[in-house]
Every structure is written in C-alpha cells, then in structure tokens.
Length: 227
Image (cartoon, rainbow, N blue to C red):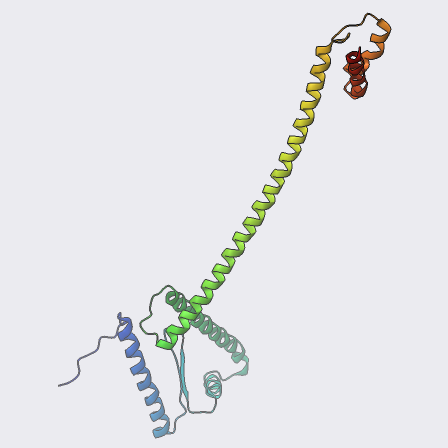
C-alpha cells in the first residue's frame, strides 16, 4: 500500500512542525552528503530554522570557496561582478537582520510564556535564569526610583518646616509690636495716674509712646509706683 500524497502547506501544530523540520532536515543533509560522495560533486547546503538556527553542509573545507565559485560562474565579467557583489552583500545582511528579528521575536514570545513546547530542559533553565536577571534589574530600578522620591519628599518637608518657622517668628514679632502699641494707646499722653507738670509730661511722652524707648517707659512706671 503506497504512501498517501502529502499536501504541501505550513503545518499549524508547533510540535508537529518542529518534528517534521528535524526529520526532513536530517534527510536533506544526508542526501547532500550522498550526492557529493556518489557523484564526486561539490555541494553546499545552508538551512535556517524558523527560530534562527543555522544548519549547513559543504564538501569543501570552507563554504565561502563554493560561494565564490558560484558567483564567478554566474557573472563572467569583472565589471558586472561589483554591483552583484554589493547586492549579494546586501542580501546577506538582509538574511542576518531577518534571522536576528526572528530570534528576538521568538525570545520575546518565550519570555511571555509562549511557544515553550519545542524548548529543551536546558533551554528552559536558561530562559528562567534570564527572567530572574530581568526581574532583578526591574526591582533595582523600582527601588532606586522610590528612594529618589523619598529624598525629594524629605527635602520638600524640610523646606516647609523652615518656611513655617519663619512665619511663626514673623507672627510673634508682629504680635509683640501690636501689644506694645495698644499699651501705649491705653496709657494716653498723660499716663494712667496723671501729673499736672507739663514739663514732665513733655519729657516722658516719647518714652511711653515710642516702642524703641521701652526702657524709659518702664523707669517712669517704677517712679510712679514709688510715689
């Protein structure tokens, strides 16, 4: 009984796709080796997996020699080889970038807990270590930001306390001046007990009403008390 025809389309199941890739990759590498041995042919084979892994086979000691031979066979003139070489270099750069992007996308999905089925135990351990290191960096950055915010709040608190002290001092000074001014107004220009001597009143009036002469006012009060 013959094998049924396989429909060539992308395998949706991730595990089945990975298993099929491994089997057919090994078979393709085996066929390339058999072709080189049986027919004495120079064979170069390059395979990139969907995860960005490189698999290659070459009968020569260096695959670059086979690629150079391929380039020289396809482009006869030296003049036309320069732009083609630049195009080949751009294409190689494109392949590198594409592989890098696919690898980063796969790594991102793995970090989010997706596509973990094809990973081996060792790869899962490496992924776990990467996540732990990332979490340590995140916690360190978070703690540093919280410390910076705490220092800033303490600085503002100190500024508010200093401003509060200045306001209290100004309020106290203003209150003392107001009390002294009210005392001067209550005593009046002639004093609380009254003295008919106009000369003495003219002499003592500045000491009573002027806050700066508070000492003279106190001496006058003591004099009245002794009488």
